[in-house]
Length: 224
Ligand SMILES: C[C@@]1(CC(=O)O)C2=NC(=C\c3[nH]c(c(CCC(=O)O)c3CC(=O)O)Cc3[nH]c(c(CC(=O)O)c3CCC(=O)O)/C=C3\N/C(=C\2)[C@@H](CCC(=O)O)[C@]3(C)CC(=O)O)/[C@H]1CCC(=O)O
Ligand SMILES: NC(=O)c1ccc[n+]([C@@H]2O[C@H](COP(=O)([O-])OP(=O)(O)OC[C@H]3O[C@@H](n4cnc5c(N)ncnc54)[C@H](O)[C@@H]3O)[C@@H](O)[C@H]2O)c1
Image (tube, rainbow, N blue to C red; front, side, top):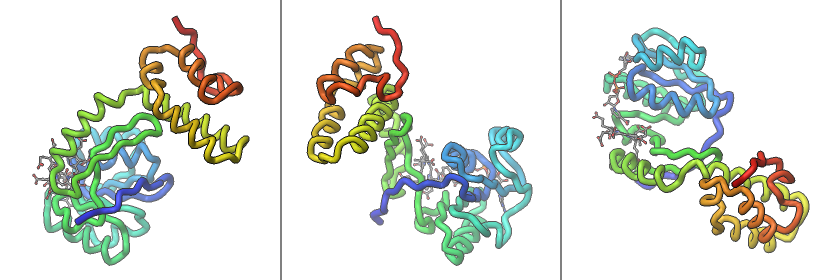
């Protein structure tokens, strides 16, 4: 089934992960990163999850799932190795209108987890609508080699330029032209090679004065 791909803000929202193994751990880490309040429910935990509990990054209920455990959740994950338990979680979520990811039954899920490359505010997500997760993983690895850390800097820089353009200039056509030129410029390659002076030259050429890395509040380093 074709699915809507969205990026959702879960900061401060409750996320319940049922199960405490390898797959549950993989579901918890991005939730922690986006500052959700994560609760894990499982009779026992994998070592990595035990550490996350020890460091206060997830709340832990040491028990088997029972109906009502999803109360107040903005999102839920059924990641136990018991298909019947995962189905019970799916039923409660469905009855309560809570989006749920059932890790052994895509047909019962209201969403699935894409394979993700993160570079600062740039997120590249790959999904096959649940058909071929191993393919998503392979493509994620290919993308990770093409889009390195320099894209985090590029996205940050373009965010600053865009903010400044939008606050000081309401000529949208002109702004679009500048931002499109920046997106198609060699700025990522320049960042990758530490050529910040050349980045400055490009900014001057494409945006005009007032857009140095300093003006934009971005760290300025000496270049060779
Ligand atoms: C992308 C990724 C994200 C993540 O989980 O964070 C992810 N699976 C990953 C890896 C992976 N999963 C599996 C293998 C072994 C090879 C294989 O079976 O193909 C590998 C590959 C590996 O590990 O190398 C086994 C597997 N996966 C699912 C089932 C159940 C079923 O299909 O019934 C089974 C059989 C379980 C069993 O054996 O019983 C189901 C789902 N897995 C999804 C996501 C969702 C669809 C994503 C999409 O639309 O493409 C979906 C539908 C639900 C969900 O979990 O959201 C993550 C890669 C992270 C990365 O590396 O970036
Ligand atoms: N979606 C995916 O990407 C993917 C990949 C591989 C496997 N899977 C599926 O994910 C499931 C979990 O795999 P795993 O490798 O994490 O297993 P695992 O054996 O490492 O962990 C299973 C966890 O479930 C917990 N559990 C068992 N009964 C429970 C209950 N009643 N209530 C709450 N927790 C309970 C256990 O304590 C354990 O922490 C399997 O069903 C597998 O088919 C999904």
